[in-house]
Image (cartoon, rainbow, N blue to C red; front, side, top):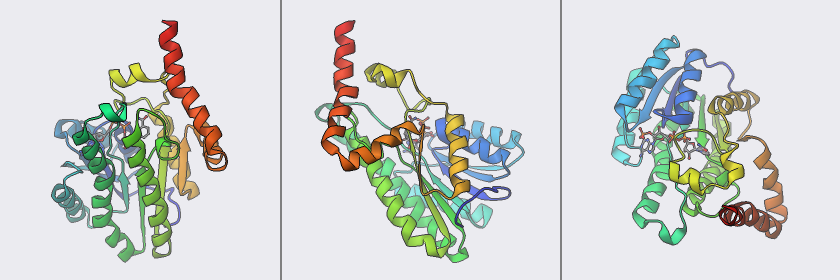
Length: 272
Ligand SMILES: NC(=O)c1ccc[n+]([C@@H]2O[C@H](COP(=O)([O-])OP(=O)(O)OC[C@H]3O[C@@H](n4cnc5c(N)ncnc54)[C@H](OP(=O)(O)O)[C@@H]3O)[C@@H](O)[C@H]2O)c1
């Protein structure tokens, strides 16, 4: 597959399906005729998404699973394969972030973030890619982040995990292109989901807090990018303007990032 526009009858496994972007994506995929496998830790939340998928006229398999656990992830992927026979599309979306200074950040949580945000994607991709290659048909979407392109203070480990995901998606996408598997990474900016805790919102620069984007619009954008066969896409679009600046003038970019983050927060504190 080199792009995908028609999801009718397609089988799609979405990790992080219980909330936020994953939840909206599952409902919207169901409205377009996809059959879903829903992965996340919280069964009751997955059951609610399953009801939304059913109400949209499709079907879903609920697969409670901690994606950071290799055995659980393998078992969930196998259960989806056993149920549907094959999986056409994998969306590696499960993940979480934190806003904290590096030294104040608990090392256990740093490791856990690496396990969830990176290893979870490795486990599902390892299990589901071979059957895509065998059928010479498949699509893998990695939910990265603008933080995977331009790193900002207070999210060092999160940025590291998302840079890893962009790298994984880029390299894998080229490797498997001639085997009929289409790979795309999505780099959302700040999206209005439960991803941000109250504490995160309090630490966020005012300009970012006031411009959280609608997840429905992100999903519209993802569908358009998939139909166009893009390999990387950013929504909202404006942060993508920083990517070439980062590449061509890293010192200038660093000053701009500092000004928009640490300096903006300090200025806001002083104003209050
Ligand atoms: N919101 C944003 O501004 C933003 C921006 C850029 C990128 N992203 C990325 O988009 C993805 C989805 O985030 P979101 O905004 O939709 O946040 P969210 O509403 O908090 O959803 C996160 C999802 O990940 C699942 N998850 C977390 N840890 C898991 C684990 N160990 N095992 C299985 N599932 C796990 C959660 O389900 P359970 O709690 O039920 O396990 C939930 O379904 C993440 O990868 C995030 O990094 C978000």
